[in-house]
Image (cartoon, rainbow, N blue to C red):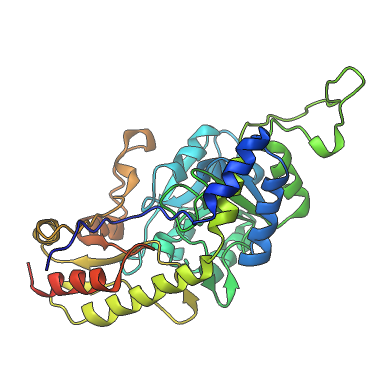
Length: 370
């Protein structure tokens, strides 16, 4: 069988996107306008996200969440090292300290028991990451947060469309942050959103994404300048209308595409569960992954990678624990599961462009052994 290279990720662009974006370009109104509001409205209506504020990246969403949660210099934010550097970088941007808790080896998600061990009088927030799209143990984490009166920030960059106990990720914690970067489930080219449960803080998010200026209540004066008096630092994090137009187009058929990922994941789990040398990540029935990634643990990982590469199938760890970076303080030796996870995790393709034939080919290739 001749098979083209099977990529780990793809970028989905709906057929209607070109016309929607072209209309924005033709209008010459390219900044934040009506389409951004429409996009936010549809995120709520179609996907159930609560109070989403659309921004220019998932990292901007995380940064706003950290600020709105009250993190200040010298404070601490507990987070996993199993993530992308953006999660901890936004903590450093506030001159606060990211404190790494250990993860569950079976899922890649943060371990609640490790979180509680890391809490100090300086802890201001817990940032959790739904690794690969599989929701963390939110009940246990919220219990800890309530006990110590600290905020919960969900880094849901992987988890658009995931559910926990029947609730949509995007309306459970104080703050939930999404990424609409090119290879995510839903792309705006680059972009993101922060969902804020508290209505007053939601207004602060909307203002904070554009320098702190409340445009709704700061009309231009006779001189043409908006009337405002800033009391807080703001940022240029707003989404623009041509990005929102792309997002609105790509919302078409989103749930159908998400269901397709679930079908592929089900086939993988059924076919690979008894393959010698593979241990699938643990899943429970009380939550549903968004399957941005499909990962598992594998023995002789380098040989496994070489096997798939020789058959033109991409695979990757995606991210190793970020605590190895000096900017975060270097390797944390007390993260036993993280170190073990670093040694055995791997991810194989799962995305919109994957055909049944390609899924069969991936499964058949893996079953040959390595």
